[in-house]
Length: 619
Image (cartoon, rainbow, N blue to C red; front, side):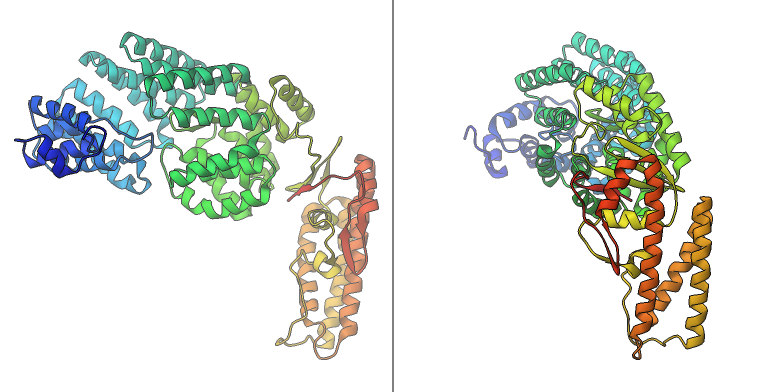
């Protein structure tokens, strides 16, 4: 029978004379393996209290972080249904709550179990029991918003564990303190806490504590741009974790290695690996990480599809990976998400401004929340808010010496000298960011009343005029012909339709007279740089064009359609000409490329000539 899983009946034959409920508990706790079953049988025999509860509290979990151990969950549920002493029941309930962390659908049940356990433990008055239950509560209710509470509770756990002489629980309290300090962006204090954690583990004879500390030192080394050190530490973690048989070692190594590979420009190879983990662990947001990596390597279309699919689930979630998932989707949304999605993500992240994006037990940190908020605010056209967020992120990164994150934030902030500083940092560290990527992508993004252009060596900010949205639409679809009417109507794809009343002659004449007046006012707004007035006039003009386009071609009126198309051609050509004239003064190389590449007429087309970018990033 050695090495083969036994059925519950076979296990009962191996352990004669024991009650059926104890045999069932041993079978669940051992997974049916004979040798562990014999050891657990001895534990049950020597238990002073309820043997099933003793097994529920002492049985090792056989799975990794956030993966439910179903047999152990059944054992804990069985034990909780028995009549137990308050101190034992409190510990059974809190372990049950903690093991349910791997079930994303059990948030409500976890809180119920944790609250009952804490109430029982406080009533008992034993510092050791209360320390263990408070530790379990932090694990079970891992709410990202509770970092300050987590720091306070960690101090309580450490003090109570020291009173009880429980070194293992004291070690847990020290690690909770480290994690909370990282979340609150106090990295110097966090590193000191990590050193104390490692030394306490050494005194307690806990070899795994040293491996955990090494892995988190690697995470901090990545943040500070010490990639060679991080790689060395990762190798040490792999060797030590394998030697000690730590179940979570492969995933931890994959996380560290993946971060290093992405920073060095090899993120595309990491996408299938992250997607494979997502399939094995549904509900823990690994898909959001995959989407962020897609965006980092330029697969924006694929990443935005993932954003649409994942957003409702992530926004409704919670847990130790939730904040990281929201931040990853924010990175994607800022590169082209619809405004409704961007707004939702901005609102979800706002309560965490000033903090760092931390995954789980600090096995990944992806930088300041303010960096993501800045990207989202810029996508929403809130230029001043975006710069304020970016400024806070940069100040935090400089204070922490987090050069990796600093390079990434400088690459997108847009203040004078940021791009050059980002490139310098990235070159020194040995990473690839948006600023150092040599793919040649050009950028044309709207930021409120301004447009930001980055084209090779040229950068510029332009006040909004009506020709810029036309240009953005054209360069985002190279080689595609766009009808003049569709271009000026903001791409609504207007077509002649049937089944509607046709405008009478008086109405058409009134519409055309108003259009002529609007065109004159738009020209004046463009010359004056009055973006607010231009936006209002453009909205009215587009509505009129849409109505005329709808009414054209019905009842044998093709000449009317031609007249409106010709008006749209003239106006779009003139508006684009205004943009190119402005570009010639601030970005002459870009203007020359566009003049050579734009085709006008009844249909407009951007047909890139040599010397242009392989693609444009637009909003």
